[in-house]
Image 1 (cartoon, helix red, strand yellow):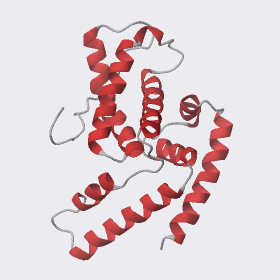
Image 2 (cartoon, helix red, strand yellow):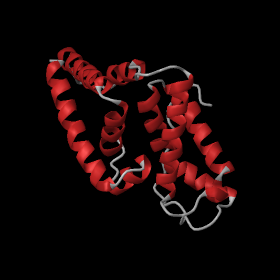
Image 3 (cartoon, rainbow, N blue to C red):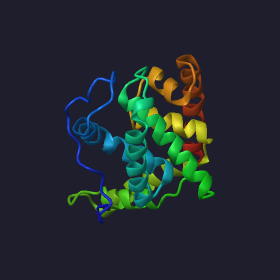
Image 4 (cartoon, rainbow, N blue to C red):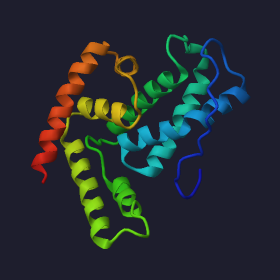
Length: 190
C-alpha cells in the first residue's frame, strides 16, 4: 500500500477482450487500466481513502481468483464494477455504516483550490462540495448509487442496468426520480 493513499496511475491502453482467462501480465494491464476507476467508486461508497484503497486491492484479488467464473457476457470493466459494488456493500454492512462519511470529501474540497483562488472562492468551493455531499447522503442507497455511476463513472443506462441487475428502462426511470430528489435536497440545503 502507498502511504499517501493516492489512486494508482492510469494507462489508456484498452483491456484485453473478455473471451478467455487472462495471463498474469494481461491481468496487470487490466489492473492498470481500471484500478483508478475502481478506487474512486469504492471511495464514493466508503468515504475513506484508506478503506477505498484496501477495497480496490480486495476487488482485484477477488477478480483474479474468480477469473474463470467470468462468462464474457459483459466487459471486464462492468464485471469489476459489479464486484466493487458488492464488496463495498458487504463492507458497509460489516462496519454497520449506513451513510457515507465525508472525511474524504473534506480533504478533496480543501485541496481543490488552486494557488490563484481567493479565500472567498476556496470557501465557496468547499461549501458547494459540502452541500452536494449532504444531498447525496440524504438519498436512498439505490438513488445515490445510480447518480454516482452515471455522473462519476459516466456509464450508459445499459451498463448501469447490468451492474444493478435492472433493465435500462428501469434505470432511466429511477435516475429521473433520483435527479429530482437530489435537486430538491440540494435546494433545501441552501
